Image 1 (cartoon, rainbow, N blue to C red):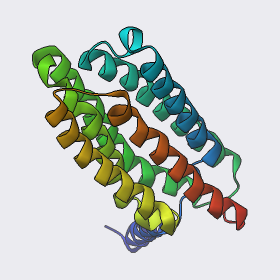
Image 2: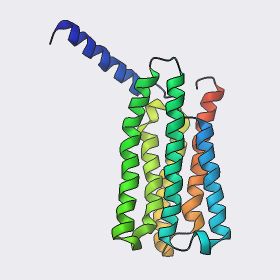
Image 3: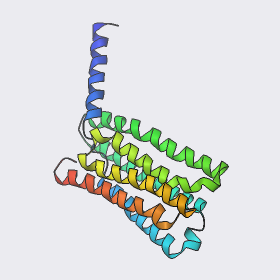
Image 4: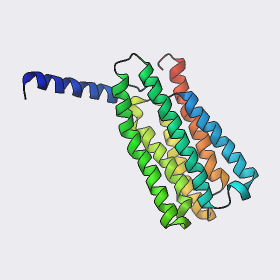
Length: 203
């Protein structure tokens, strides 16, 4: 490898390290807030009309899975658009660095519940807790790139996911509050963390 190629490779490594340690500004608090509002709406629907929207654990997983998928598309789409609109040269490397954390977790959050629904539907009650702990994992893994207060939503999802697993197991299945309330609180908390950064002029 020539000296020029080595220099280019070193510059690329430095940019990747900077991207991994710089706060990512692509996530919009508005998009996360919308997911929180949708979570609240679904939770209320499941409380008011349980026979229609909370008939069994599999229905919980399907409904919340659709919301999770829609939320991921909304947040990711907004992040990509915000990144390509900015003139910051670090925006694209930061987006790539963020996706390296988010994409594997998203794949796991889709594949494992799908396998549960197909081969072990009686265990569907574990899925919402699993999703919440996955969100916590992403929040903690992204700590160096996100506002410091992201640790609080991350801790909330870790606690609520673990507690939800035990509550659902003890209850013999999911309830609207066990399945939905953690998503409502957690998404609003993430939006709050992102909004604080934006108000301080960093987003």
